Amino acid sequence: MERGVEWDFEPTLDRIKVLLELLGEPQRAYPIIHIAGTNGKTSTARLTEALLRERNLRVGRYTSPHLVTMRERIVVDGKPLSEERFAELYEEIIPYVEMTDAGGRRIQFFELLTAMAYAGFADAPVDVAVIETGMGGSWDATNAADGTVAVITPISLDHTDRLGKDIASIAGEKAGIIKPGATAILAQQELEAAEVLMRRVAETGAVVAREGLEFGVMSREVAMGGQLLTLRGLKGVYEEVYLPLYGAHQASNAVCALAAVEALTGGDEPLDVDLVRQAFATASSPGRLEVVRRGPTVVIDAAHNPGGMQATLEGLHESFDFTKVIGVVAVMRDKDVETLLELLEPVLAEIVVTTNSSPRSMPAEELGGLAEGFFGEERVHVVPRLDDALDRGIAIADAEGEFSGTGVLVTGSVVTAGDARLLLKKGEE
Image 1 (cartoon, rainbow, N blue to C red):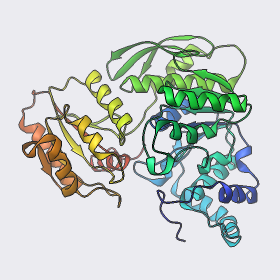
Image 2: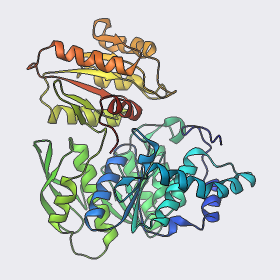
Image 3: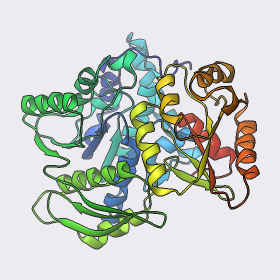
């Protein structure tokens, strides 16, 4: 049954609320940690899940988009739904979807997946669900549920055609997940975003905790394969916490996850420090400064907007001692492509521009034309197919010599990262 495409939809909660009502309000069967923001949502969701699971709770995690398979989006007990369970869940809810359709409210693609997640988590059943918004907040399908804890990761410009042309407008949309009686966990924000979020907190009477004030990263040093952190949570200080993820942005994601779990558990006692260490030491965030190959080192990253790309490049510089970086880049045509290229230019010695598997991907020739304006013709290679582009990028790095310190960065989109991950044989986690 045709449900349209994920990125083209009518913003309203009317349809999903009717469907969930027909399903018996499954989203009310468990407490929810709800996560919105421009960058860092999926990593924060995975880190939050890791902490909760380490406390022996059964956790449902719903994130988007996926890297390799749609089933990655709906996770129970740390594992994506099996093909059989995914199909079974679809078959279980489709009669209710058709009833909603018949009432003149045609359920759209992301709404269907969200209903499947909420119903699947109730059926499992889970002790707690970690839910990432798809886009925005106020009218995002996930917002038909009320989060006990609302986490807002850093807000920057993205989806401006949908969410607004400035930071304040985007923050206003994302603030919609903060509900009366909730606890709002706010990552460090630009001033315009912080003001809007704090107004929402005041309007709802939510309890607020802000990174850098009520909680934060106290110290951080680069360690083999990641970083060593001292984190100040809402209820205590957690020292010698190893995080196998790169960059200051991941340390921020980790402390936001920590504060969210502390807020959910209630009381004044801090979490067990060994539990926190164990949870974070085994955490992963596929497609986020992830090393997928050695000799030469190939790093993939899902950065697709200026805020995300800035964080990625800072993390790359801090955590990898590359003498030279070759870029393999494919982007969506509706993104701020010129700013992405402007940010990449000082970092990349050469850039291989290509396309990913999405119909929204900018054609390689068009991206190449834009790239030449920043890099000059000599540094730009146009290779239409991603598999060939990966081969070209690796070949350029190889030609520098085994001990040259040249690395390859594959970036520009979540789809690019997922496609590259599959092609380079990392597969599904």
